[in-house]
Image (cartoon, rainbow, N blue to C red; front, top):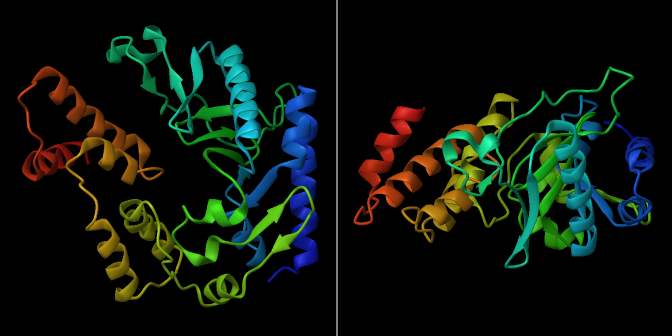
Length: 286
């Protein structure tokens, strides 16, 4: 495992590069002071594995709004999109309004889910090193392995209340340079054990276990029972609840499922969603 001192140096270097790439001085200073890096990147650094991406969260709404507006503007200018940032019920999201972009969505305001260019390190010197390449309702992905999460904000404890597995709760704070490595997280990382701590999105957690198992992690039946118990409180036949519960997993496919159901509901006011219809849609799409 890498030493904490080395991990802090890697994260600080990455953060400095990102900050210096931001052209707007106000946004640059907000990101410099109010960022938290947490999740899988620190796990990868601890185990000396390649980092998939660096997940950035922000400590307050002001920074999230500034970041979202800045990068959506950059994205629109580069790709010719008409995406906008919206705040509803305290939640910040990105939407696309252009009928030319939405295509079959007939100009209705639709959440952006389409990849515009591959998310990969920038090797072209003519392109900015940290440029927005992908927009979703949850995050803005930049080239060079940075993901800016706009769905949640707050201190580390508040952010981790939306997390599911204890191993991902290590974090680094840009304001102080402090690296927190909780003992429970380190134990789970060393043993490669998935320990479910509770989440607002238990269905997404269940689906997410597949990728960890492929990487050699293990999980006992009790963890699945905990996820199932929380999921039992959810009405998955409410399409908005289902959409929320599928946050961040297999977005392209599940988006088609949600969109198919919504179209049916719009076209047939008397339509009532049931599990048999939903299973039929899932079978068709998957």
